[in-house]
Image (cartoon, rainbow, N blue to C red; front, side, top):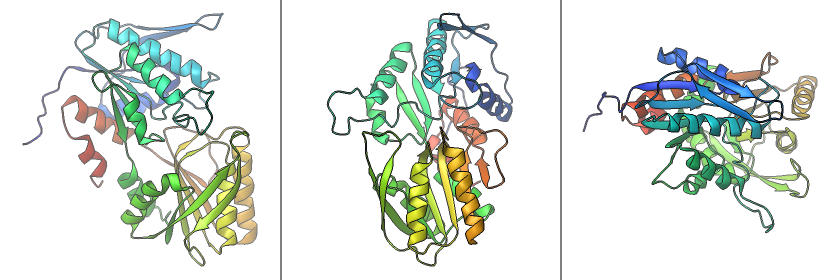
Length: 338
């Protein structure tokens, strides 16, 4: 059966202020304006969002960046403002409401990790978005696919966008690949396998051991596979403080790896991350090997150094929004070659 181009409802794009830069780029690719909105923060820290346009009967897409250098708002400030926006659209009688949040906040808090007295934030945030009135939540390569099961499919659907095909082609075009694809831990092994298959490359993995009593800490990485004399493409979904990257590359270099490209979807770069990776790049130059870092625009960093490369995803998300609106195949878009 062929896909219909008849929209399910008139499309409307709007954004929270922290997601405006990303939303404007998506809107430009679609040739559509962003709806006028007013985001207000009160002196006490409360906020609200008002929509200055009619969205009754529309297919509304609301953009928000959960983390980034655009402002000083916290992840929680940004998430609560997204909830305000979703509810505003739902209460304004939108036909469909989709929250577009490329980096899903709380995605790494998807289980208790053996401790019993803590919550599961990924599920909490899913229930909050659902309660606010989101019919769909669109994310990019969410940390754990099982988070989709934290939404009640009778009310809210998780649209998890995979970048493997498109990012791999982009890496090949720029010569940012390797002879061996390495996963930084066994949890990302299946995604690393997909990159290896696209590149017809070998596959290896690191077994990463953490001390969960100390946030963002890795005390040992062990290699499973061979990298001796090979150029390496190290792939992951999230880099936060950069400690895991340094530990992984130390292990790879000790096992004889040559040049290393690190490609990651969500580049949070908190705390000492820039300093750590800048020192790593300086070390690579001193030792005579190449180090490059690739991130996507789910989190955009202004004025990055020459060794940092940004893969733009706004065009792909614009196409996916159009496919959803016209009841088309999202899977086909993710698998299509450019």
